[in-house]
Length: 207
Image (cartoon, rainbow, N blue to C red; front, side, top):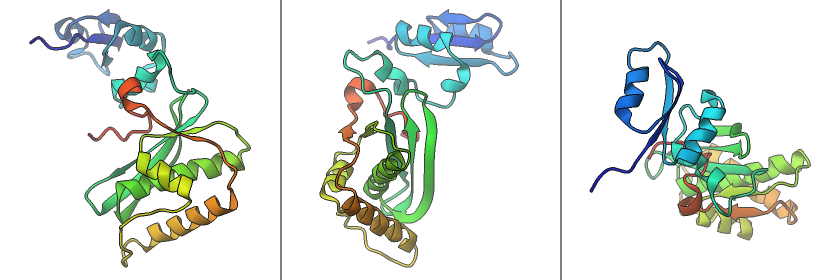
């Protein structure tokens, strides 16, 4: 079975444009100082990328752009959040991005002895609080059904046990639960459809 076709965008190289095989792309970028290039899954994605700036795509998985071309895309004017944790428990961090611009809005951590679900929960609440503070009506997207359920319940239902290393994390959990209790009317939180839209753009790209 052959490998899936790729479309290679070269922003900076001997020649720029879209190339349909790696050898053609490599001929433009190998040995070229500060070459700028990236692979995409479809020609439509590649054409859109070529019309933009390399900086918008550098260091991001190509799948993070898939939502732009979905038949039923997410709401572009929104915040997308995600968390990453190394081990269970382990260092956890989370961040939020503005979906339309892909600009990072906030980043927290890493905090010791956390879990991914805790990070996802705190990321959602962080985004909701920020939107409320800025008087913005846009929704929040998360790819964690568990964290969304916790937010809806107003409680971080983690099995994680507090210890001397993760007390700052539990302080944030308490503050998040208090905020949720004081703000029963808040911006909507929607589940990110990874299958249809690719990895959530707030993903830390460590998979």
